[in-house]
Image 1 (cartoon, rainbow, N blue to C red):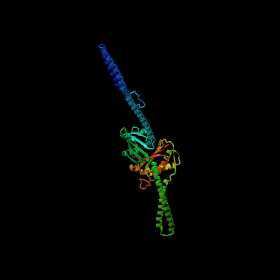
Image 2: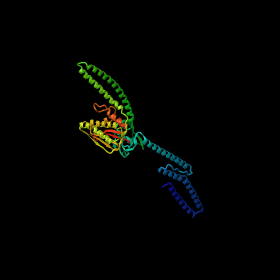
Image 3: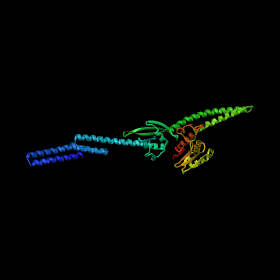
Image 4: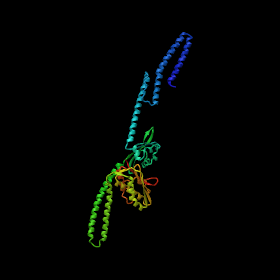
Length: 430
């Protein structure tokens, strides 16, 4: 029961007792009656004084407690005319004003933080303490290659993405640079923030792909040009000298063996020049001239072109097409890309296998093979300049593919899945 109600009950009981005494005094001596009446008047005055000093301020404070319980920080208490009570009311109103300003400031900060996270060029993933994803900004969805509906209520370990698997291996409060099988490079940070007294983990993912690729390209362009210049100048001088000596020896008898050796040397010089030229060609990839191309027709052309090579290895190559809209690409460059991918798939199989070229909507093309696959260690290096798993490989085929696909603004990945199939998937952005 509230204090005001208790006070009313107390006032009624006291007045009842005083009324009873007044009744008794009225039937006895007159002076006793007036004395009792005076006590009643004093008691009534004291009750009024008590109500104004104690009960009314407490009632006002009780109303303030209700405002706090309802979190109504915009309302204020009115003064009651008592100095001590009004001091409490003033403190309470000041506290309410501060709470209102603080809540408004926090709302504005949270709104700004939400906008900042949504517009951030870095991927932001906030997870619960047991690993469930609670928030994922658009950049993180794009980097992971998933949609918002695929994230809701899921754990990070349930996301089918190579990057998600890498994030799970990063210890708390550490930063790691990750190179994935789609030639993308990310700087990943695993940290935490305090919420309701508990640390909540989150991940920051920053793309370093463009910066690293540009730095790599500047480095290998400079090296290739320098090597090509020196090798071509040297081989040109050597072949010229050998040709002159060969012409001179042609008129001398019993020099066939020497001339044959010189012929091998000349051919070796030409072979070295062609070898260096292939590296130089990677630097000189022309800018794509885009035109509308039917992806199914392009896939069919590449299939027919590679059928002979696959037949020699007893490899079945098939085409699985879907209704795909036309895409804008450089037909010649993209044809070379698909031929290179199919050639790599055939070399991975070696013999007695299957290659499937599959198109899908939205516009994408996938080359699937059942070769020996790509190991986890190799996945991180396959798009690194001059890296090759082939004994005599030069490591420029995938660099050429990466350059062309990047210039077409395609997203791509090369990965061996749990079913043992290796898939090179290329998706077009509109």
